[in-house]
Length: 428
Ligand code: SF4
Image (tube, rainbow, N blue to C red; front, side, top):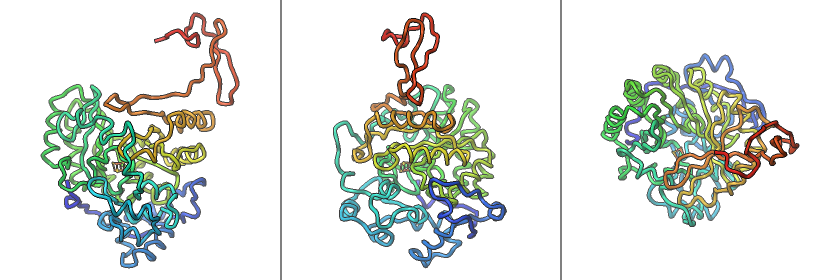
């Protein structure tokens, strides 16, 4: 599937929402104003408008707010990056030597959120390559989750009995340097590139496999497809009687929020019950534009969940995650998974020790409503599937009492006569 197939009938117009300065990551989100709610186009903040005038002076306000323009104008080369960023020597060398899959790709909107002068700024670190990306550490591989061997047909991973992963496209609006599917996304015409023929084979497989009740549509990012193609895909899946649950996995609401047009949400509503998993990294992504996109999706009746990859030096501290999860919940997005970074080739720069994730979950629980605390997950390499890790709060046992440690570190007793937990004996 190529970007040539992208088309959307909606026409975006510039509008206005609250200043990003008024919405620092740790502060309150700006609810879309009543005026912006009435406007048919997509609003943009004063910061975005200033960035456009400074870096993309040739772009009109209407173009900036048009998701197709944002895709066409993506920053994809050294020259393009140098137009926005003061690159470090490491970044410049890493971009210059890059070949093959997982290209550089950043929408102008998302670039406007990044630190132009600071290579350590979190969003920039996730999207501009550095030399460590070329280091393969022990245990790393190009397909650590074994998705290719678990593919029933090309582009359809069938690992769990009742679920299937439908890789709808190899295209994303931005390319994350830690992407689990870096082996296949962003390639033009590569072996893994996904075509309409792949879709038809995937539909036929799902139709013939009644135990599949849950389909996750992912990629690549399915929201880079045109409304018509996505409508067709969802319609075909919805027409399969045994498919009860359809989810879309996407990062678009945060990196290309103007894609969430009224036409798109009208189309998505036709396919309910439809859920969406939004890939979120850092509170800096929760701008007024992202708030508008998430509000439109929630208002269209899509239950929204958030998936976050735990990334070293980017979001691996409790203050950042508390802010992220609290602010997501305010925008009606339920934190769902905190994912240990998969050991893809070159990911050593991003991976934390596993105990960091457990400590972070410990630091969230008791300080945030349970709705804001995600599950901490390792996707077991080699195709083992998702394994949830939980901090251990069992201190031991005293006779018939189970000793529990609460979020403040205090010990409490629970009467549990005959129980084996805390004795060291197997209990399952
Ligand atoms: S948006 Fe998702 S599929 Fe695309 S590069 Fe990022 S992690 Fe990978």
